[in-house]
Length: 89
Image (cartoon, rainbow, N blue to C red; front, top):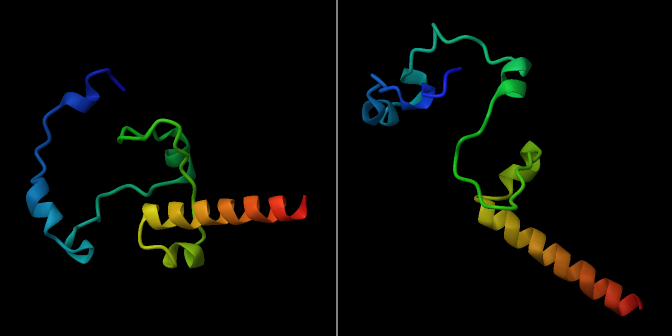
């Protein structure tokens, strides 16, 4: 991939595409996304320094509406663990 690959102008009408339901998008000419694709993929989105990306099991993901909700639950679990350790010592 060349260094300027991300600077090429897209001919996609992104506003129109954003208004479409998934079922309306013609995916017939899209190649299958294989395991190899994801192994080679690079993420270019904004990331918080020190953040970790984790995959949640589907049943766990259903319980949380947002990343912040997951973080709040994990912070509570950390605090509870700290309290139990203090009580035991």
